[in-house]
Length: 126
Image (cartoon, rainbow, N blue to C red):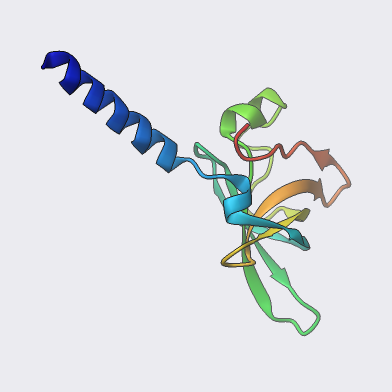
């Protein structure tokens, strides 16, 4: 009985963990390439993924808030990032792929600072 109970708990925990992490292709559309130039307005340095929120103006002056998901904080730190690599107010150009449900919830694939530095982005799951 104890073994069956322990197995049930282990299976439940594994299912909860698997459900908490999502597939890149389930969230984002590889056919919806986006490039956004704007200002960082919020940084979420959290796991399992880091998020950068960017306000960008289109040709008409309309401001759109973009939420770019990136790799884990550990993957970014291994590539030389710190919490201070990008700050609120920094100008960036971010390339990526739009969300399946909401285009502006995108995954980053490239990032360049205003002074031309290319930063490692990594992909979610790293």
